[in-house]
Length: 139
Image (tube, rainbow, N blue to C red; front, side, top):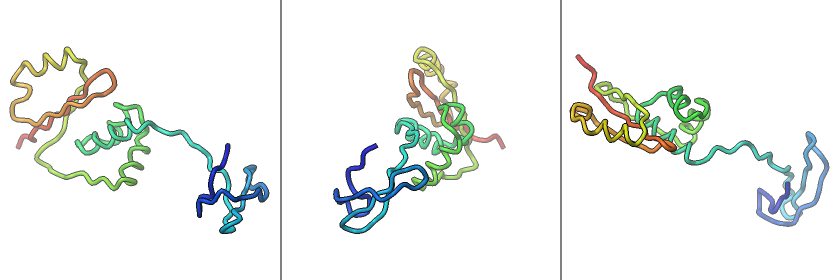
């Protein structure tokens, strides 16, 4: 791994300064800041982050999002905290979702019974589509 700049002052003037926890330590000559090479972790594509936050706002639970996207529910929780996402709470509606291919989606919308009295959102999910529908709770 290469280091380009000091993470504290963005200077390119640094020297090696020992090894800590089997990682090379450096010291910046300008600000005397000690730092090590950051470990590059597993990065999840931004597409999945956006989709999971959209689904969360649509009312799906963390576990449902995990089953649909294949991303850990803990990751989804962390993204919700990181981006400070607040879900609007409304007890009169509840979301139901279905995953359909293009032809099934076309057939679904041909029947007016399916879209009567409910809000519907369709979002792309890889090569398929997710249909999220809000229905009123029956009193």
